[in-house]
Length: 90
Image (cartoon, rainbow, N blue to C red; front, side, top):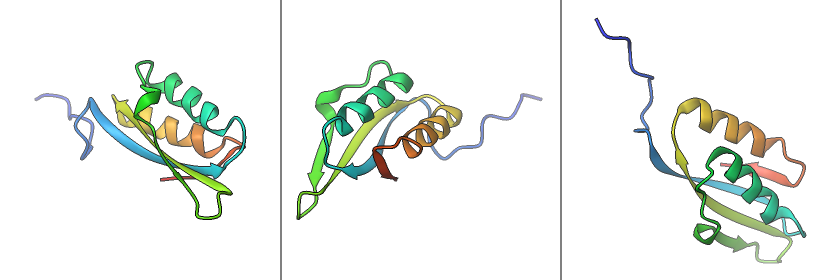
């Protein structure tokens, strides 16, 4: 009998979008890119979708990483969520 495949609804590898929100300050986007590249060395900065808040205080970024495992995604979410410039990760 074969070992069970990792229980996941996500086929690996796959392009996986993540929304990251924070205050629109110098260094926010660069920090998110640096974290993304730690987990996906081929991450393309040009693929980032940017959405500033109406008043311009906050910036929402949608980054699309190549997900290779559940563990990779869990650690990526944990790293982004604990970054001091990041307010929300979805």
